[in-house]
Length: 100
Length: 267
Image 1 (tube, rainbow over the protein chains, first blue to last red):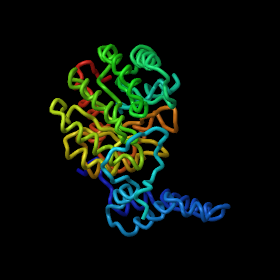
Image 2 (image 1 turned 45 degrees about the vertical axis):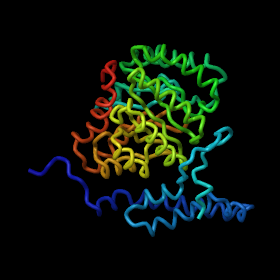
Image 3 (image 1 turned 180 degrees about the vertical axis):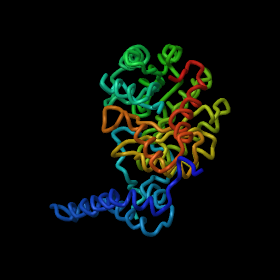
Image 4 (image 1 turned 30 degrees about the horizontal axis):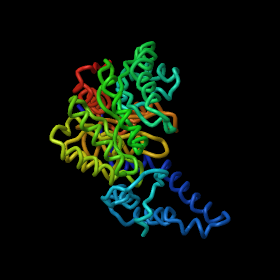
């Protein structure tokens, strides 16, 4: 008798998640287009976060089966020394010291 | 199904959310002390907050048949001011003795500063002295990897702390392996915008297995969802995982970790 629960295969995963991830991809494209369209685009595109974002997009195609970890690492502060003070600081989502 | 949410900030939620938890199958929650969205001005403000966590919330939860436990600690975002930290640490033992308190948490790092580390070491010393469980907050976004490594080094160099009695929370794809390899429990947080999704959480279960993992909503005053753990369980179900495995991740695992505190009883 077949088990009640059966893990899916890769084609079933593609079928299940394709449409919602297609939409996510279009959200990203639209986000980049929006920056391009607004006044001050050159300044925004020079920002380290924008550069880190584009680098992460490149990693989608170049980092094999470890895309998620590669992108997480690309956004991370990989230094090891504590900072002197946290006063007034917050997290921005990308590490300025790691700009490609 | 039954589930435990091992990390949820009910002080920031409405009473209606207790009803949603109860009728959806979450009958036990654990609430860590955290940053309230603003910096508190004095230790007396923390005193009132700890009272809220240990008296008011358990009573509010009980009306809906939900068991409410909590963790007491000084969060890392308010640990930069050393005099305030000293005063808050001085009042913590009174609350750690209370019947619904599971241990010290959520404590950890925010921006990985020297003062944050000093205060964290003091809270670790208190945990050793009292033999308390620890719930660790890891930094957000770009600071997570570095902070997680600093925290693990501090714990592993303290012989009085055992990784099996520490849950390192807000783990993500780039920190899970190191946390698990070092013998710690780890938590995944389901935040719609800034942390993990149900899909990524179940990817982690598939990659790293069902041992020593706890999944939480961390629902609070920001964009979050008190039913997120059940939605994540459903994500695991729709991929074809067994109910036994789902029950382990969403009920048995948090029960096993939290039961290391003798005060804990799962509902």
